[in-house]
Image 1: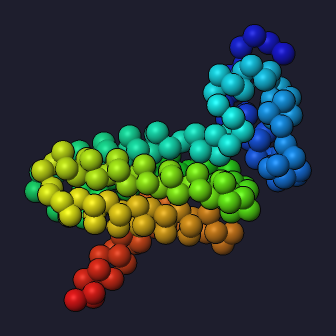
Image 2 (image 1 turned 120 degrees about the horizontal axis):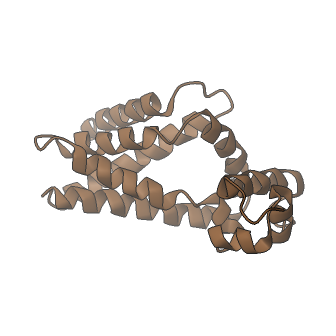
Image 3 (image 1 turned 180 degrees about the vertical axis):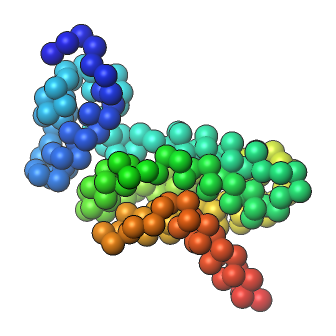
Length: 190
């Protein structure tokens, strides 16, 4: 192994997902992940605190993209339109390669209650990022919270459709569709 290897984070993620699929999450060690990636355990810990974090490492980037998307929305944009900007901003990271990895990731997370719990914590942080960005635009409560929750629900809905085995559409169009569906559903509540 060389002292420096390119794409270490991505290699570790791929190796972890392969091993989680082959052996199961509980039966895979950090040492095995590092070995599969052609790296050392020390390198693994430069990127991830533990094997669980391999499944959740993009959360900070998503929070940043949500915040930036809302901040970049035109001044006259409604809170819903600003949330649409947040979803548009995230679409760029959800490409074909990411889709294949996400499809491997979903069953691993779904099969473990502690990982499902971590996924819910991730969702809470994404809602907070949107809520804070909306508040920075001067949107009052409870509108910030409602818009952020609906935005996160649209994100989760689009993501679920995108990772489905028959999912062929791009993430951006799925997110726009999900947000539009939620807008109509919210309007029908009376």
